[in-house]
Every structure is written in structure tokens, then in C-alpha cells.
Image 1 (tube, rainbow, N blue to C red):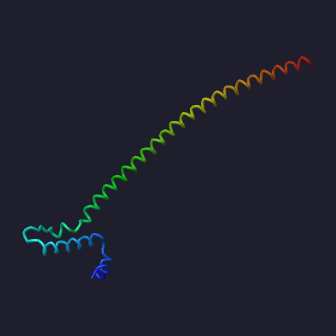
Image 2 (cartoon, rainbow, N blue to C red):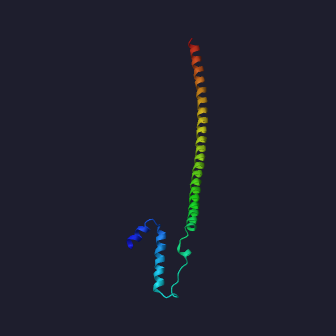
Image 3 (cartoon, rainbow, N blue to C red):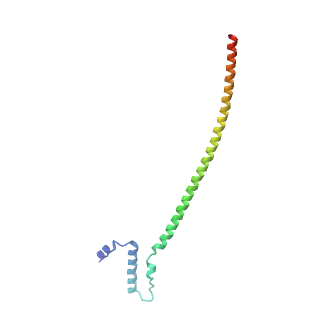
Amino acid sequence: MNHSQDTGSRGMPEDRKLYIVDSINDLNKLNLCPAGSQHLFPLQEKIPDVGTNSGNGSHSLFFMGLIIILIVSLALVSFVIFLIVQTGNKMDDVSRRLTAEGKDIDDLKKINSMIVKRLNQLDAKQN
């Protein structure tokens, strides 16, 4: 008898197996206990409501995923803003350096022209 029950229950999901065991227990209690002392649950209470619980779970998972995505995107946006500010500061430094070097180059051109004039004057005196 156990062998025939085992082969028949292999294809059943776990919830159905538990329902069958509960039903057998209820039948045994009916046979052993007086009619007024045993309280039996209706069939609707024994079968788990799969759609209700999984729906709430999927909604909560969806919201948790949404919150995680929003936090990650906020962190990425903050990082991008930080990089933009840092790049702006670096560009200001580079433009200041270029301006200073441009003044240095102009000064070097003036000094070079003064040296060339002086050398030309010395050449003219020697000739």
C-alpha cells in the first residue's frame, strides 16, 4: 500500500502532498473522536492561495529593485557632477597657465628683439 502511494505522489507538488496528508488526518480524527469535539477547517482554508502571496512578494521585490536602481542612479549622477566640477577646475588651471606662458613667450620675444637690435648695432660699429 505504501508503495502504490509513493509512486502516485511523485508527480505532485509539495503543497498538494501536505493537503492530502491533512485530509487523511482529518478523516482519522473523525473516526476516532466524537462528532462534537472535532473542528474541521473548510476546504478553502487548507489550499494555499498561491496568487495572493506571490503577487505581494513580486510587488515588494519590484519596489525594492526600483529603490536600488534609483539609489545607484543617484550615486552615478552625483559622481558625474563631481567629475564635471573637477574638470572645470582643471580647465581653469590650464587656461591660467597658458595665459601666463603666453605672457612669458611675449616677454621672451621682446628680449630676443632687443638682443638682435643690440647685435646689429655692434655689427654696424665694427664695420
